[in-house]
Image (tube, rainbow, N blue to C red; front, side, top):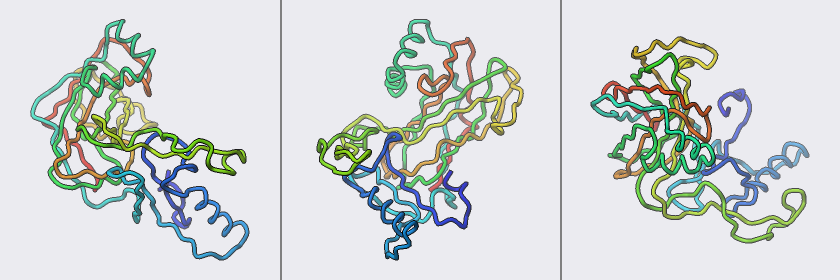
Length: 279
């Protein structure tokens, strides 16, 4: 969406970690007053020296830290990871008990997915040098389905017990900010930075019938190999030498996708597949 805006527009991006939430009451960044300063300059014609960088992003490696970038994505350098040397299979169908259990609480599915207990392919990739992911990671996969359809989900995690920014802000001070939303007192919040076993870096979902374009429906021939380029959601994320990336490939995502429990499987030729990261 950022790049879809016309090039003549002076545009800025605030890129925060975590879920899609308001950040007007976070302790680490004065987002509301930044917006007020820009609106005062534009709508009231007040001359100010207030300037914003093109991209203001929240550093994932430290608490309450914001940095600037010249652009979002459009990188010239890439790091490519090989995914393996064998063929692996993803079963789509779960037992009725597990399917009902995951359907009732998708959080249970996510927990077991991260623990390697769901129907999935799990690939751990050591990071051998510092990387600064900026843009869309891309999966280049050789894949086939046992039937004439197929849904592929992917999540890229940073793996390892250490401190990560959490997805939802915590309250630091209750009702301490005046003139908040709807002119009411508002909580002061911030994303916690605490130990966890992993952190989601990015994810993506692909109907294999739309493997070339969302508006183009292509047939899937059972047991016939397809070469697929699969872009994950754009993000900004720092990785350090010695970190570990975990790639998880699966079919139905109980939080995001259609919950399909038909009996089919996908096969991925890992030797002919790679992960490319813009950095």
